[in-house]
Image (tube, rainbow over all chains, first blue to last red; front, top):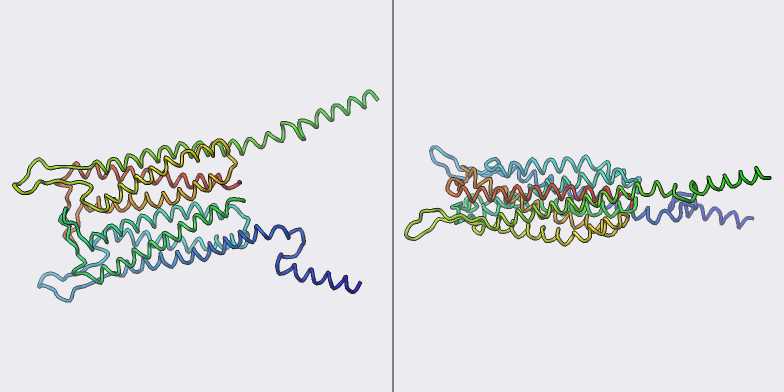
Length: 199
Length: 199
């Protein structure tokens, strides 16, 4: 009786931290734990995507260069305001970053309740929309940055990066950050889809 | 005994259709039919996305305008070849259209077997990648088309659509077709995600 009592205590001690108590829960933690892992990965990836989207918006929004020489009537200055595509980039990446902040609570719900379908489906649909927005902003800005770097002889559009080197460097960095964000969002959609497989 | 026997028969007759017969099957066709409907919608939408992606690639690929006047050394001509972004557009939309053609058999598998998870998950993941590619191509081309239409005084990039009106019109049409394709792909991802909910 003494040994039986101690055995029972040992089993309960071993079960409580791992499986949350009862024995019928024992087969469940295996898929549940896998889904929990996916949800935690989702949360971390979401944080990363948020940081890079915010960095992209901030880098583009603060890109501004004034050349050290000026004429009597004109001062040479480049800013993201000069190009509508860059304005769209700032707005779109700010929206994506804001959405990713607001989606963090839903991601936490997925960690706490790994088997819930609703929040995961909501996140997948909204992630897809955010992915489209981020990709559009990044690609459009990349097209303009390429033009600023290389110019185009066929249309007589001259490269402006010879004059505004710092501006171009900062803008290119913002585009790279937006692509990091796009890759993270694609991974988020794929992870959500795999985790959704068995509701 | 006679009445008791008839009662037993009545109970069995009543139990067979309710417990093991057609009645428990009755609720099953409902989700199955719902999934089948989603799969058929997926197929139709996929066809539409394919057609618009193909139209976008074809319209851009055949965009070519030669002005009716020329100097001794130079003939004024605009083609999609002049701009790297438009070349990328043609290649990317052709890849997307090709992928959509190859994905049609998998979509048919989803119609035949509405409850299968594998093909649907595969389609969702690949659709997401195709969506990213199509969005990037469409947005980058849109940025350049906007520039061609409006120019940019800050960077001294002049609008070329005054000279090459037909070229600009065709290119703009290709961009619109690519955006139709993007909307169809977003809907495809959402439909796949909803249909995946209960494997």
